[in-house]
Length: 324
Image (tube, rainbow, N blue to C red):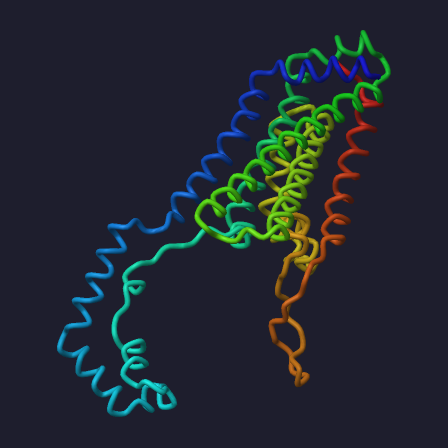
């Protein structure tokens, strides 16, 4: 079995399409990270000086000075009635400040867990799905599957070796990329003087590892479906239909959003996800929107169940159907 795993690993890494997808799994998250760093760049010294000058010019305007005098004369109207120094309190309340003319989004790991972090996981999942479908679909399209079975006629061993290799490579690649993404953002936050607490960094890393597990699962699903339908296009079509229309179909047949695959995937990645349902109001009347929480274990159960179904169908089909 070890030798078979080595052979399948060599075959996987020999595919140009797979290598391109793995390279994209590095490049695209890197671009996302660099974009987030540039978008959250603190203002330069020149921008701060310009904002301070603009604030000073606005403060010297006649209508601002009149407003300041009204505040000093009647501080209670401006919420500074109890201030010991009405002049200073009114200046803080009325006069323009430099930060009014400077706006930038500070880089924080907490915010990135619902922004760039999710984007990276989505990209990795899509790319690993393509890795899984491409790896299996090429064998059927080229007709090499029959040749492989001549050297190893035990089909279950062949299926297992292929699935283990593609899942392990996808999971390892995704884990390395997400870990690098979060460590790089942590370094940037620390370099800008921010406070990247260890607990926040650990939570971010754990989110990335859960996302890597989802990416590995999508690679296995893609492989299983491609082995089942013996076609890359068919496998991708099924996944696209479930991802796009799955939630709509569930809503039409009256099944709650708690069974939506994308929502369950989000619950796994974020360690819980929120959604809204229509339920009775506190006073007993119907029609209120109530927030519910989808826990991690529920997401793992739903996604794991779908994965088991796809794997079993693929294994049974490969074991019994004729191979051309």
